Image 1 (cartoon, rainbow, N blue to C red):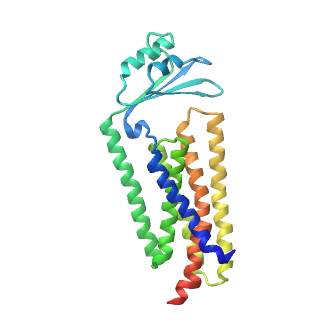
Image 2: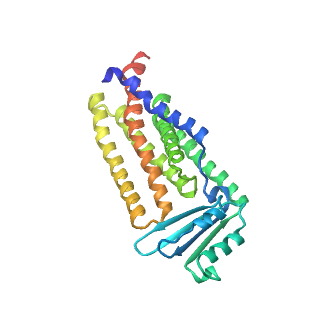
Image 3: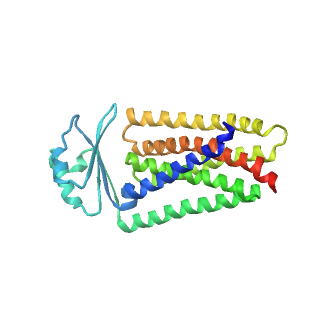
Length: 281
């Protein structure tokens, strides 16, 4: 197996590159946090038929969410939709003169604020990577292991965004927060692995890798199980908390990718660095 580790090392990176290509072709949905618009949530009668609203507003996203206590209609409309007309149509469909008589919430985000948010979100991710790269290089003072840590984090993000594109998860405040958390999870296991492999001398290389893998896999699998539980709870018990569902899915995809990037790619790079590159100098 070790003879083929160089081939295995590049497979997760190829997956990350394919994710980038897929996102560039398929695109990424944007929530109203990013694109601007209006989000309405209203409690509706059981088995509420909103097909007439869908026909009247083909560019508006309608979605029913059910919990044990109520049924919710979530409406997401872009900035080009006449919101006053949409409110009137919704009130007519629900047989009321005033939506405020119902359990009703509405959130509006203007296009200027949403574009500002998009700029700030991109800056946050960019600065996170920049300072992560500086800290990692200061810790290890060698370019190859530092590059491996940054490559793993960047590939995790690329695969997570690819998963968002496949499953139609929109880029929003919550999913950007999930991507930032993913950088932390990724760097955590990669730095633990790199520190034990490069700085500990009390065991063989394989022994240090195996010990790191036991600790790192336990950390990652614990978080994966927690995110899976969160996903099922939000899906079947509190569906109105869709933001938590998006966060859990993004982290699940990224953490599963991180298992490959850390324990195949990063381990392969470190094994090559210790057994071949470092000895040749």
